[in-house]
Image (cartoon, rainbow, N blue to C red; front, side, top):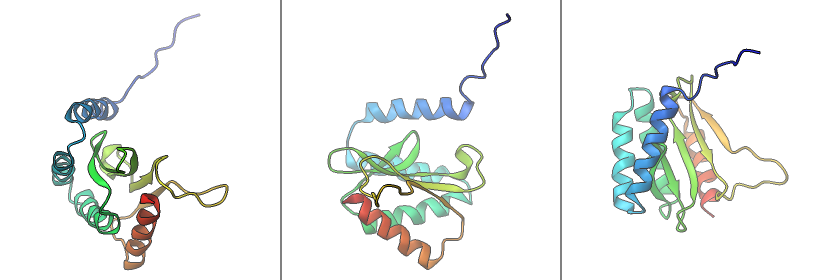
Length: 142
């Protein structure tokens, strides 16, 4: 039987892994993490960049105790223990039609026996969307 070749990692996945190695080498310096996050937002296109900036403003206002940083080259936020709480994935990262905002295990978003951990974000968040995102972030931060 002939062996089949698997496609392996995409270029975007390889780039994300390289970003993660850089992040791990950087360590837990809050200001360096914030600067990395802002630099990544500045590199984003005209659709993702303004949305990422607005999400960053909402997150930092709702939960100033979370540390901004990057995670696999994407904006992310960790708690005082260094555990990942939330992340923003731009649409262009993996050629998706929408950006995403999600929560990780350290986020306290539990609600009964089932709850969402990621949200699709369009590029025109309403005031109600922003309010809901702020509420979710506050809850996630604990």
